[in-house]
Image (cartoon, rainbow, N blue to C red; front, side):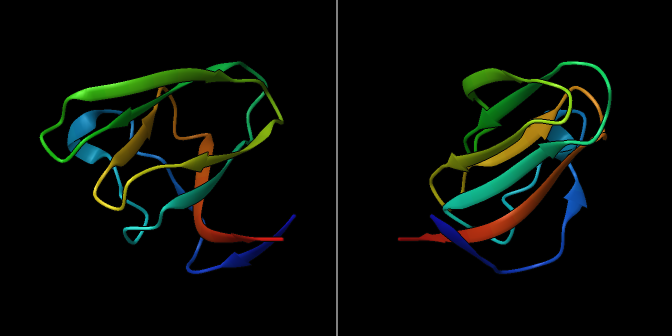
Length: 87
């Protein structure tokens, strides 16, 4: 699988009020740049939690979501980039 990056990497917000759609991307590459496990939350446009998962220290994960869904994490050490997955 290869990735095409659509925008700059940015720290995830730490609550639903600071969550991001990452340019309305359907795929978002997340990396935990810290040394602790962190909780990641996906919420819809109405700020309702749809899903949560834990991302390990140093882990990279690709999240598929609806364009208006938002992502935030328990710490700004979790960084996100809007991407398109190919292949």
